[in-house]
Structure formats: C-alpha cells, structure tokens
Length: 346
Image 1 (tube, rainbow, N blue to C red):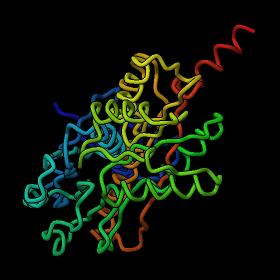
Image 2: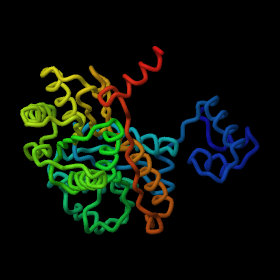
Image 3: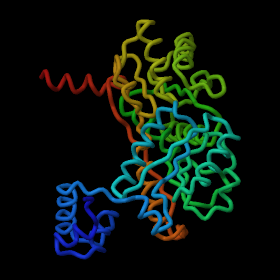
Image 4: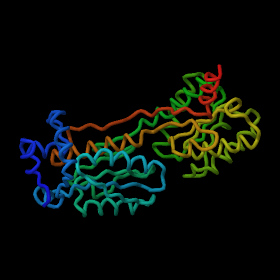
C-alpha cells in the first residue's frame, strides 16, 4: 500500500501541515524537525502524488525555462542552477530553445504559458531589444535571466557586465601587462558594457588604448577562428601586446594556439584571459585563465525568485532584481599555475 502524508505525520507524531511544509522547503520549521521528517521520508520511500497535489492547489509544479540556444556553453550552467533551486521544492523544469530566432523566442514563451507553467524563466538573445508580447498580459511570475531590455520593468538576475571589462584589465595589470589588446564581442548591450569597463580601467591606469589592439571579429563571431585570426593580426603589428582579453573562451583558445604556433611563450611573453569559464574547454591543453560570469548562480537565484513569486500568487512586485559580480578564475595562461609550481619546488 502506498505511503500517505498522514502516515508519516502519525509515525512522527507531527501534524500533516508540518510534514507538508518540510517537503515544500518552507523555512518556518526547525532544523531538528526537518531532519527527522526527511530521514523518515527516505526510509519509507515516500513519493508525493504530484497530480493530486496539482488538482488540489491548481498548480502544475513545473517551471518553464526558455533559452536562446542550447549550444551556448552558458546554457548548461544556467540549467544546473535552476534545477538546484527548484528540485528541493518538488518542481520540475521544462526547457525550450529559440535557437537564436526572434520569432521563435515569442513562440516559445507562448508555448510555456499555454502549458500552464507556474512560473517562467526567460533568458533572451544578447541583441534582443523587446520582450515577447505575450508577457505583457500574463499573471504568471516571470524572471529574466541576463541583461534586460531598456523597457523591461520586471524582475531580472544578471551579471554586472561592466565589471567584466574592469576586472579583466585589473588582473592583467597585476600580472605586469602594459600593452593590453581586447577582442571585443558583438555590438550588443552586453558587449558594449564589457568594452566600456575595459576602457574605463585602461584610462584609470593611464595606459594607451591603441586602435590596432582593439579587434572586432565578424558580426556575431566569437568562436575559435576569430580568436586565432585576431592573434595573427596582433603578431603582425609593429608592437605586439603582452596581454590579451577576449570576449569568449573559444576566442581565448584561438589566441593561445596562434601564439604558441608562432613560438610565443605563454605566459612569459603573452598573458591571455578568456571569458565564461567554460569547462572542460579552459582546462584543456595549456589551461586558460577566465572570467566566471556566475551563470549557475544566476539560474539558482532566478529559480528562488520565481518560487517566491508563486508563493505570493504572482505578486512579485516587492522583490528586487539581482546583479552578481563576475570573478577571475586564474590558470596557466596568466601565470597562476607556473607561480604555484615554483612555490612547490622551493
């Protein structure tokens, strides 16, 4: 016979409401009680009847997650963060991808809402200027992951993109780079903010920003080939940079390979800093220092905000948007590994 919630309550001499609160992840239950309940639930192999609970509460216990592309390395990190945020509360995640198509982005949002998701997490294309129109009339909690369009007045979670450019320059300066090149990304709000941060920090350090060291790949191309070809151009210049910041880790990989093929020593003659902290990419070959953009944490925070909105019956107006700082993950390409190894051998 299937174990019921009431059976667990009777067994532990607790109320059915207390058991329910623990299983929903509510915080107004003591840690001791929570541990007792979870231990007994596991021992009895209890499985909540989601269908029955849905009929009773009018919920589907599903969170919609609309991504611009599943090919983007950031997607896996965002999905992991969202799952981490919702699983303890008995929710599942329905994932769709627009594959970079603006019209499909609108359709995917409509699809999620037609499936009666309890909340929608929306991660839009970097060049998107407007939200899907269907969101203007929905009462479902919506959380935007990433930099919001100018007219968006809802809840969002995003990385502080200007800081990306700033901490990149700071890191390279700390490693004695003075001739710093930048492979800028697409001309989107995110790309522009990173470039602004780069320029601000360079000017603050009173370093020259040479036009021949600011390279812009073909529109939308932030891949390996763009980094490889950009480094070839930099090496053909009269003065070769001693530090390179890239828009993506794939670009950094291309820069690294072109430099090594030309006989440059990394990091002695050239230090390289990627962006995205894409694994295992950054740890393949001569490892790449990179900027972690907190994608997993963004997904987790977005999930928590959505769950709070569900609990407030969609009234998430009291909640605030969240912005997270990026961080440097140092590896061999800026000298961190080499410095560590020298200390070990002393």
